[in-house]
Length: 184
Image (tube, rainbow, N blue to C red; front, side, top):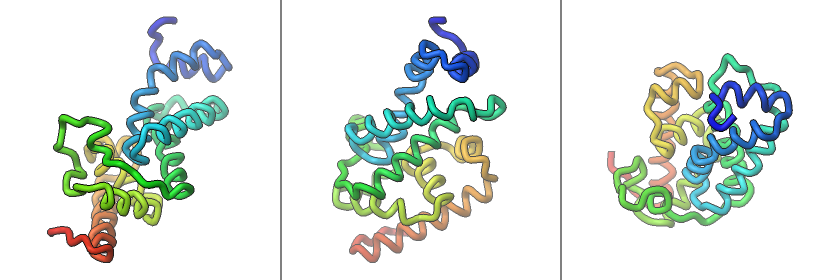
């Protein structure tokens, strides 16, 4: 059982097999940390979120529908916990760009040049309606393609684009209200 396909690991985990669940954790840990880190902006909080996500995964894996994509389901658990963390802690954050990939300055957030602005954006995200939060995070923070957002969210392309447009429009207004004037 060294490199079992994920479907087998899920099935075995649903039967309370801790070795299979451990392999599932090992296969998904990097992606889970990346998702949490993109949202909360620091490794300590991301690590706590991922730990809680795996506890929830263990407790709810028997509810997982094998006809659905596992990665999308699990990443949504991580996203929800990360958003809850932002709501609870109102934490001061560092730039994600430097923590995730310091040599790559080409990210969706390159216009956000300083920690103060990042902090404003991070505190703003939880004020969005749930669907706009999800689409904004997946597209503009996690840098997923529209196709990937569609697969993970189950939303239509037009719904994704509409929600993203509204979220970005609200962000521009929020930034303007906080003294940052984004160019159109």
